[in-house]
Image 1 (cartoon, helix red, strand yellow):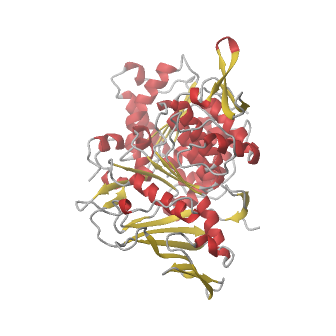
Image 2: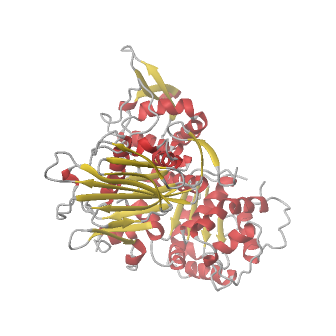
Image 3: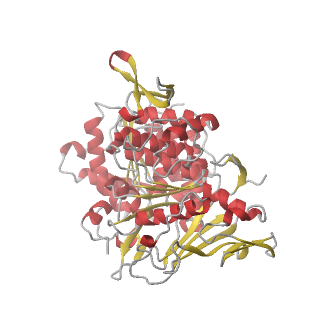
Length: 189
Length: 386
């Protein structure tokens, strides 16, 4: 894997950013990580609003620095496809012509859509079968979810290894996320 | 050993087994702007609010109790009383959860016109409601493990007597040990404050890190692994930084030096006082991170963003929140900096504000967050301060 010199994480909340940073550490990326997470209001609105800005910043910078952009937006009650479509429409609506293109093949942009939210992923990644339709957020307190963050973050690294068979309990949104992470400079290790 | 128990060396070198400990509650009455004030800290928290809203005074209240108990100094003076509260008693309570038990320490300071110095009206420690120590009316009451009183002793009413009870009840020792792991920092990186001389070793950091060099000298001996991590991270944070070392000067004084790579790949050595305030601040912050937060301690840190360049704030914050998560520590930041407000206020922000009668109150930042503006902007407009 060709390591980036800068990684921008656009995400809804702190637990997601902690999870992603922990995943990046597993990949050997310790520095150069910038988090853009929701400062106030709805996390979903924030990510949608910031997405074109971050894509623009990525495209302006990618020639100069080796950069990754990882965008995470919760599916909530929607599907993964409907959320990525919403992200795409944000680019399509942009007045900036350079932005209207969707992610092109060589761009190191990954779009992760936990369904329903990051807590569902924390369960699955730590070996618990979970239903993507159900909201697990209130089944544990903040500290209990925090406890799961580190072990959970180790799993995507293992799952993005070449020829890795994902376990049977892996849910669709995570399968798609693994594909997205593999897109960042290709399945690697 | 149970799953949660971890062997470690406490800051003062004592060995202990411990459960992830936390400051659970603080109660302050008749201290500066605090009247009947209760605060229940989270594992990660950001205290924000206008100047004079009581954030730093909260830190002082904890520091003063610590110093009072250790006997270092007594900063409870007439001037620390609430100006509009005529009550003769000042109260501070610290509540901690240790090994699943609630430890409650209560200190009542009495101010009376007849006495020149303030005196202890009551000093008491209970564990899950059972008294393990009490000092009142100049008499110390020692309790055995079962809660029964075992003996009494006359003691000076101007000093804490808690340390005297360490032998009679192990819970007292446990509480004192925990108190050693509660740190309040207001790092002052000015060169005439942050001493580069290290003729001695200091086991504990001062609240302003004025003893950074003697503390570091101690840490080099007791925590070489932590030092390796600290230096590795400092290399990332400080351009061209290579290493720290102590050197003996002509005057025989040992001083802390920093080596940097200069032009032409030459190695140059700078004294601590030759570094910039920001470089010294970063050094202090990463020391606090690796030698305190990463030990699972409770840290209350006032304005960690002072002097630090914008691009270095988030990396430190990331490393600090990871250290809290991995070591089950507790990190409470006090800040006005937009970078920190926008990053933590929504989820961890606690807003300090003064009521019309002057008393300090708090509310979660989220309760004022519906302006649609970033927290820094909301605060800058004064819309979040009421």
